[in-house]
Amino acid sequence: MTKVKPESRIQVIDRAATLLDAISRYTMPVTLKALSADTNLAPSTAFRILHSLIDNHFVDRDNSGKYQLSGRLIRLSNYQSQHVDFRKVALPYMEKLRDKFGETINLTTREGDVIIYVEKAIPNRMMHVQQIIGSRAPLHVTGVGKMMLGMEGSEGISGYAHRTNLPTYTRKTFSDIESLERECMHCVEQGFAYDNEEAEIGVGCIGVLLYDRYGEVVAGLSVSAPIDRRKDEWVKHLVKAGKSISIELGFVKNQQPIKETS
Image 1 (cartoon, rainbow, N blue to C red):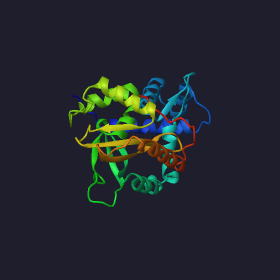
Image 2 (cartoon, one colour):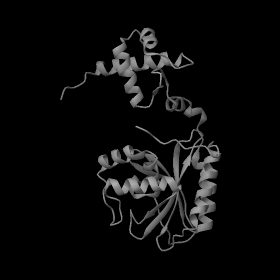
Image 3 (tube, rainbow, N blue to C red):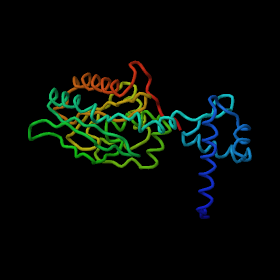
Image 4 (cartoon, rainbow, N blue to C red):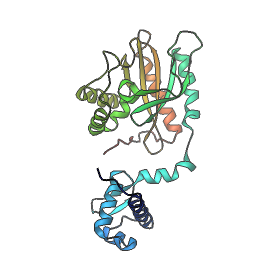
């Protein structure tokens, strides 16, 4: 395999940055010809770099073939000033759900192909499902994770399956792409997801997603309980809490969540 020289990689980054700067100076989508002239890059070079930026969701190309900064890049640039601590927002709702259900309530975020437990509210009794803050779980064995996969559609689910080989944890784990895709898409359609002992026998959960002001998934909210104590009636309370938290995070009622595309 031919190694890429460090200076070559730096040059590509410099050129990509130059193109992003050029695009940012326009208030409307801009043509390849104009960007090539602004950056002194050959059209073929500019075209190649722009489409790499498109693949990485930093640039969008409209139907007329013109380029503009993507919504994702704009959100990243504004993230620090507009960031809301979703844990602080979610915790009061989690505590109310804990008191209503008498079970553990979890808050999770996604990192790559796993979810990470970042906050919890546990009941005041000895016997309860315990999730350690900072612990991780594969997406396909949790309710929230399956919903996150479903938001990526068929290609996202297939990519995850090929990267991870869908390791089996119990006899109920989804271990083939077709059944996992059906499950994930169904979960997104109904607005909540069950984990039916897919990670651990005897333990089940119900999960919903939380959205920010842009309609993007920021976290997952779930209740974990022994499978024989889990109740379907919890769904409506969990869904309601998820919607309330999302609204506090800036999500507008009846706004459509953003589904990732590759």
